[in-house]
Length: 116
Image (cartoon, rainbow, N blue to C red):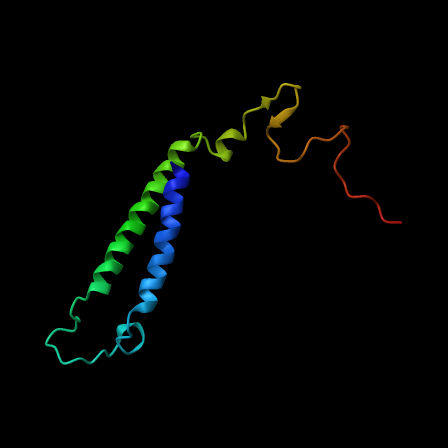
Protein backbone atom coordinates (compact mmCIF):
# COMPACT_ATOMS: atom_id res chain seq x y z
CA UNK A 1 0.00 0.00 0.00
CA UNK A 2 2.78 2.39 0.93
CA UNK A 3 4.64 1.71 -2.32
CA UNK A 4 1.52 2.36 -4.41
CA UNK A 5 0.89 5.70 -2.69
CA UNK A 6 4.58 6.59 -3.03
CA UNK A 7 4.55 5.91 -6.79
CA UNK A 8 1.38 8.00 -7.19
CA UNK A 9 3.03 10.74 -5.12
CA UNK A 10 6.11 10.78 -7.36
CA UNK A 11 3.97 10.88 -10.52
CA UNK A 12 1.98 13.78 -9.09
CA UNK A 13 5.19 15.63 -8.21
CA UNK A 14 6.55 15.27 -11.75
CA UNK A 15 3.17 16.22 -13.24
CA UNK A 16 2.93 19.28 -11.00
CA UNK A 17 6.40 20.41 -12.05
CA UNK A 18 5.50 19.97 -15.72
CA UNK A 19 2.18 21.81 -15.43
CA UNK A 20 3.73 24.75 -13.62
CA UNK A 21 6.43 25.01 -16.27
CA UNK A 22 3.82 24.97 -19.05
CA UNK A 23 1.97 28.00 -17.69
CA UNK A 24 2.76 31.37 -19.17
CA UNK A 25 4.49 34.00 -17.11
CA UNK A 26 2.29 36.68 -15.60
CA UNK A 27 5.16 39.18 -15.56
CA UNK A 28 7.24 40.35 -12.64
CA UNK A 29 8.96 38.07 -10.16
CA UNK A 30 6.78 36.55 -7.46
CA UNK A 31 3.66 38.01 -9.04
CA UNK A 32 4.73 41.60 -8.43
CA UNK A 33 3.53 44.20 -10.92
CA UNK A 34 1.37 41.98 -13.06
CA UNK A 35 -0.33 45.04 -14.55
CA UNK A 36 -3.34 43.71 -16.41
CA UNK A 37 -6.45 45.62 -17.37
CA UNK A 38 -8.93 43.98 -15.00
CA UNK A 39 -10.38 45.65 -11.93
CA UNK A 40 -9.09 42.82 -9.75
CA UNK A 41 -5.47 41.72 -9.64
CA UNK A 42 -6.51 38.10 -10.17
CA UNK A 43 -6.28 36.65 -13.69
CA UNK A 44 -9.09 34.64 -15.25
CA UNK A 45 -9.10 30.96 -14.31
CA UNK A 46 -7.84 28.75 -17.13
CA UNK A 47 -8.04 25.01 -17.62
CA UNK A 48 -4.32 24.72 -16.94
CA UNK A 49 -4.77 26.62 -13.68
CA UNK A 50 -7.56 24.27 -12.60
CA UNK A 51 -5.42 21.21 -13.40
CA UNK A 52 -2.59 22.75 -11.37
CA UNK A 53 -4.92 23.11 -8.38
CA UNK A 54 -6.10 19.52 -8.83
CA UNK A 55 -2.52 18.18 -8.91
CA UNK A 56 -1.53 20.33 -5.91
CA UNK A 57 -4.46 19.09 -3.79
CA UNK A 58 -3.78 15.47 -4.78
CA UNK A 59 -0.08 15.96 -3.93
CA UNK A 60 -0.96 17.25 -0.46
CA UNK A 61 -3.38 14.37 0.12
CA UNK A 62 -0.75 11.76 -0.83
CA UNK A 63 1.79 13.54 1.41
CA UNK A 64 -0.57 13.29 4.37
CA UNK A 65 -1.39 9.67 3.52
CA UNK A 66 2.29 8.74 3.42
CA UNK A 67 2.82 10.44 6.78
CA UNK A 68 -0.06 8.51 8.35
CA UNK A 69 1.16 5.19 6.91
CA UNK A 70 4.70 5.83 8.18
CA UNK A 71 3.39 6.68 11.65
CA UNK A 72 1.39 3.44 11.79
CA UNK A 73 4.40 1.38 10.65
CA UNK A 74 6.71 2.80 13.32
CA UNK A 75 7.13 0.92 16.59
CA UNK A 76 6.00 3.85 18.69
CA UNK A 77 9.26 4.14 20.63
CA UNK A 78 11.87 6.66 19.74
CA UNK A 79 15.59 5.96 19.97
CA UNK A 80 15.82 8.30 22.95
CA UNK A 81 13.18 6.32 24.85
CA UNK A 82 15.01 3.05 24.17
CA UNK A 83 18.44 4.28 25.35
CA UNK A 84 17.87 3.25 28.96
CA UNK A 85 16.70 -0.27 28.10
CA UNK A 86 18.92 -3.22 27.42
CA UNK A 87 18.01 -5.82 24.83
CA UNK A 88 19.86 -9.03 24.05
CA UNK A 89 19.62 -10.99 20.83
CA UNK A 90 19.69 -14.80 20.52
CA UNK A 91 23.46 -14.95 21.07
CA UNK A 92 23.26 -12.90 24.27
CA UNK A 93 24.90 -9.91 22.63
CA UNK A 94 23.88 -6.51 23.92
CA UNK A 95 21.93 -4.66 21.20
CA UNK A 96 21.10 -1.30 22.76
CA UNK A 97 22.09 0.01 26.14
CA UNK A 98 23.27 3.09 28.00
CA UNK A 99 26.06 3.89 25.59
CA UNK A 100 26.07 4.17 21.83
CA UNK A 101 29.58 2.81 21.35
CA UNK A 102 30.04 -0.56 19.69
CA UNK A 103 30.85 -3.43 22.03
CA UNK A 104 34.54 -4.10 22.51
CA UNK A 105 36.30 -7.44 22.99
CA UNK A 106 37.90 -6.34 26.24
CA UNK A 107 37.10 -3.96 29.05
CA UNK A 108 40.06 -1.71 28.17
CA UNK A 109 39.18 1.98 27.91
CA UNK A 110 38.68 3.25 24.42
CA UNK A 111 41.66 5.52 23.88
CA UNK A 112 43.43 6.42 20.67
CA UNK A 113 46.78 4.74 20.04
CA UNK A 114 49.88 6.58 21.24
CA UNK A 115 52.02 8.22 18.60
CA UNK A 116 55.70 7.31 18.66
